Amino acid sequence: MKRLLIIWLLCSSFFAYAGIIHVGTASGVRTLKQAIQLAKDGDSIYLHKGLYKEGHLVLTKSISIIGIDQPVLDGEGKYEILTVSGHDITIRGIHFSNAGYSSLYDYAALKVIDAQHVIVENNTVTNAYFAIHFDNSSYCVIRNNAIKSKYTTEQSSGNGIHLWKCDNMVVKSNHIQQHRDGIYFEFVTNSVIQNNVSELNIRYGLHFMFSNNDVYINNTFRDNGAGVAVMYSKKVEMYKNRYEHNWGASAYGILLKEISDGYIIQNVFDENSIAIHMEGTNRIEVSKNSFRNNGWALRVQASCNDNTFQWNNFTGNTFDVATNGNSVLNHFHHNFWDKYEGYDLDKDGIGDVPYHPISMYSMVIEHNPIAVMLLRSFIVSLLDRAEKAIPSLTPETFLDDKPLMKPYRP
Image 1: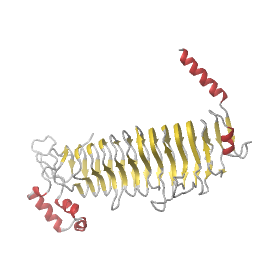
Image 2: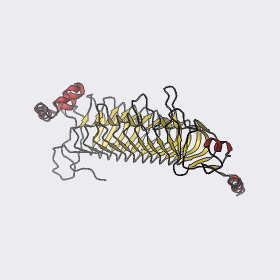
Image 3: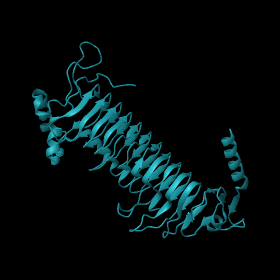
Image 4: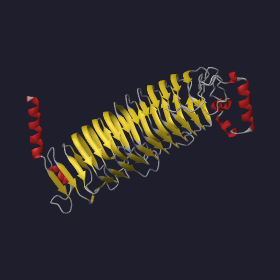
């Protein structure tokens, strides 16, 4: 009780001395730089509507900067606009515009370095190289920000939300467009990505590298150059996300490379070149997902082991599964395949004969990509018939031994 009383007294005295500084044409303080110099820990700066061209600003105090009617901080295409370092800092309601570009430095509209308990919310970022950039930070929140750039090439564009070496971060309800990668994680742990829309980015909507124990939920990744990449990570969980129309010669719904012990559950893959491409991927549960109208639903390379595919629906895909190997150590069961032509005499809802999801033609394309030109030709029909007559032409053990007769419904 005595300790609680001391904490209450400390907090009371802190807020008792917290002040508000107004910045604007009608205020005594005309610039944000001056307001930051005047502010003390615990103060709030209210930045009123207007255009502010103040070069590069640095904030290291525990204060809040709150925009009133979306004031614009303009980097004039030359400066990193605001660099933040410290703890208990809030940046809210600001429009960051025209941050500088550098081929040597990662200039950002808002850069946060060596920080804890920072909240970045309800901001707009336009025409930035990197938009929001966190380095070596923890317990921070990035939410409800609208981010849009005008990329020209992958080399001249930065990422929308970029996190490097962070822990316990929340990235929620942001809308990111037209950056190199929409959201980028490298060495980020114990973090959540939720309810974001990442679209029209030149490379990936989401890019994971060396990031473990993270969860991404209910996000939409749409029309990105190469889809989503999750690489060199473990214990990543992916629930209820939508991967839509990531379409191109090297585009994916998800590219999984060298990851292990994760979950891909209740996601929707709609009209992607390849819904899921797996290389060196082990012990992943892929269940209750919907694969619709993709070029390839699954591309499972021979280096993948002990992955489980169950209770998924495969409808309208050109190829359900492709592989480049013969030895298969993955598990398929209780999936619905719209190409399955088996029967169910005992009426238990499960086909009485196994389904081979790999077509002969998909095997030919794996070894001779140019053969895709023969798609929907007579010779491909012959290959399909030959495969059904002699199923050993495709990997014999690559089968769903309990195919569903009707689509899975939770």
